[in-house]
Every structure is written in C-alpha cells, then in structure tokens.
Image (cartoon, rainbow, N blue to C red; front, side, top):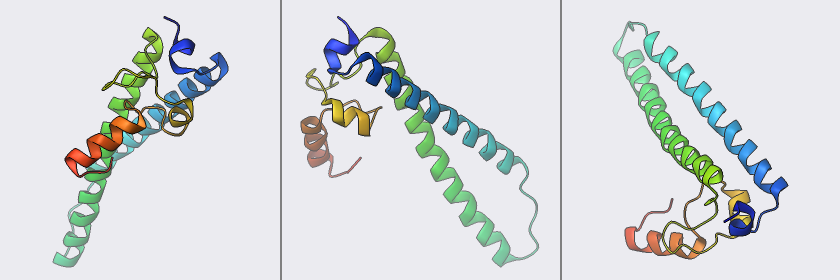
Length: 126
C-alpha cells in the first residue's frame, strides 16, 4: 500500500509534512540540549525570594521539557509511519485521517471523530 493512497496526500504534500516533522524534531532536540545546559549551570542563590523564583522557573522549564519529549515521541512515530507507508491511518478506527488535519497536526495519530471520542471519555483536551 502506497502512503499517498492511504492519506490522500500528494507526494509533494507528504514530503513537505516529513520535512516539517524533521524540523520540529530538530527544534525540540536543540531545546533539549539548551535545557540540559541550563540545568547544569544553575548557581546557588543568595536569598529565599531568589531561590523561590528560580524554583518556579525551573518547574516551568521541566514541564515544557516533558511536553517537548511527548511531542518528540509522536514525531518519531509519525516519521516511522511515513517510512512504512501507514502514515495517515487512524490508530483507533484504521480509517484515513483527513489530509487537512494532517497538515495542521502532522504527528496526530487519531482522526477527528476518534479524538473527540477519546476527549469525551477522558475529559481531557489534547
């Protein structure tokens, strides 16, 4: 099965999405490197207020780093699906994910209907 048949994307659109995914991956990996440098260069602080401020900043950085790791995992999965020709197939119902959805969210794994169903069951919006 050809990836363009599955996703209804042209070869050019598929290549553009792949390049976008690779760019996003590179950006996340660069931010990850910066995060590690930031963590290793944290200096001792002089007072409680500065320590509290630094702690809040550190917690935000950790949260953003974790979100990036989740996105990186999804990007890797999408790139693997492009390679094996299954890109654009919903992981829940196996239907074809709308090409416009893939262009907006290239590493999505679910079609709109399945995403909405998952959100209604979990009460979370992803």
